Image (cartoon, rainbow, N blue to C red; front, top):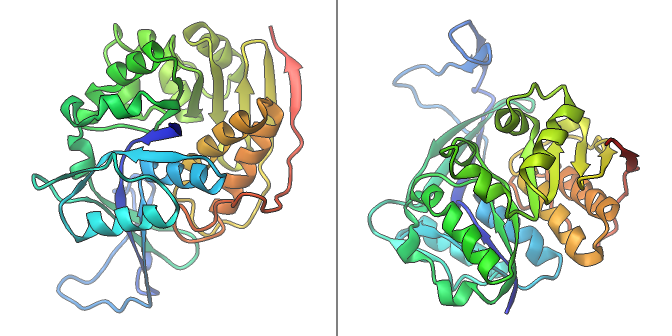
Length: 327
């Protein structure tokens, strides 16, 4: 039996760092700033770093580091990158027997162009992970788990969100749900039914606003709406500003640890999986928030989504958590 099975993407992340990745400014860029490289030239890269990424594997790494028996269920391409990801997961002690291979598409790839400072640009190829469908899920094997963690889905994987959650409810499996854009924009007849069956709902503030149609600055109104949608614990992360969590009666708030940012990749995955880890360990929301905040804070201090996450029994600082009745 597994303690938890994670679902979501598996990506080969490739970091390229160069002093030649200089910013240019202009209104044509959505962020007001971009990268300009001379066409036809050869650009020197000072550093290169390979690691696995994707919400499904990132969260699995935290659960493994916290001592849980964890498996990742997903799809990779039948290629070298797929093998690299699988081999890396094994090193973390993650069960890889639920991973499917496909020849239809290559493994997901993300190339991160690191500029001087902390700016980065991602080039993303969404490949094999998005092909995982109902027939690829080993249903008989996944029923023997206590928890499921559903990271953001895309492609065919989005279409089986409801079936996975219904399956979990039928088999008395608890569900942590971190929906992405594709899931938050599912048909109105589907999403409310899903949210009623969730034990832990994890959103960033933009996602919380998208779900509730309420500006993210109106936190109390957002949580009152979310509490109507789901009976489970609701989380809204706010980046460097911290987090707000509701258990349906109280609002819990905490600020971030303010650790130096090296790479923000996977910070949300580290928070969500850290929270669920703490909840399983002690069934205490304040402790779960503290572990989540520490895990995500340490994660951003290293390149890659997995390099900085906490190990079991590793000392970590605890943020102050406030609790207030908001009903």
